[in-house]
Image (cartoon, rainbow, N blue to C red; front, side, top):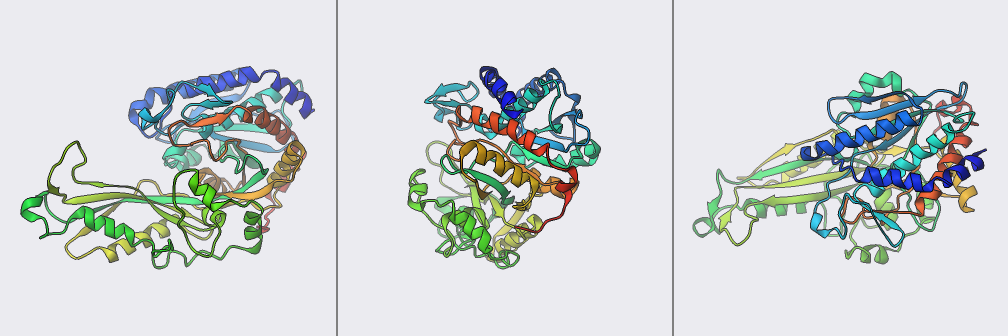
Length: 468
């Protein structure tokens, strides 16, 4: 049956692409209030699509920020109920001048569709919705019960998602979740996602004086806030790239043999990896590049500024400097504890006569893990093997998908990330794109996956399993 549905959907590939292009044209940037009209337009477009495809209970779920979108179909009694997740918000297009084509005008080049959000996450979200729609066009409907849930704050850390779950938890109850966010790990090796690193962060302000000072009158006589901030953040790592924050790794267990074997099955050439982005390698000794990216935590400075940064010169000693830090977390690390340890380190390293203050926006998200024996992994692996002729390698994401850990905590359900973006598609950067070849592959895979999961006893999704 899935072949019939997938073939019918393939015949409508142009309509699916048109859906994606229409969504890319709507500038749904969640972090910048000036893009609120684009956010509203994206919500309206998607809700209309939900209604057109025959979903029930179509509505916005408002938790005090950008609302999430919801629609359901419950015409498969006795079958599993799957929550399907995606997000309609995107990153800002900046720096706009580095785009080859306008960021919100989908443009095809060399078999790729360029535009902000094309890969993260509108491409895979459109694929998932279109697959559900294709099943609903069939006389018997979908092989599973469906609850579509599209978030509007993923790109800003999902700050009101807990409030949405608290308010609408009954609507969101399901046996398991499929995420259209997450992406594939390789163009050539089939992979299946079984987890992701967590994330947290904060902003730090370092002050050294009551006001900016004339560098001719005070240079060489007082502390310079930018100098001190540069020295301060440099203490987070040793010369070889090890994290130097006391206690930060205490809750991190050594990677299991199974986890290391899985990463070894999907090797990455470190020199080539760095050369592709014009960077030089650095990281915790004793671990391969892929292990450092997926099995080990990290601390990064995302921005550092202060003083005068305009055209020309202004001879001042800045009174304060600021930096933004993020931490990628692995199993065993609590976001609040990780932040506290890094903040304690920075306080301890702050020199006499300087002061540090911290600002936290959002609580962060812990790492997530999906057991290899879970029905979601089994079904996803079966589908990918049938499509690609090779058993997929289990991989963990280096990035973070907050909803996976959050929904496990709040709703008690596991999540399989089943997205079709690829790691070189310049997500969050200028000239983001989505390969057009991913559309037919993703559509067929999602159609097959829904049928495969329809054969699973709903109770099997709730059996606790400790297999890593």
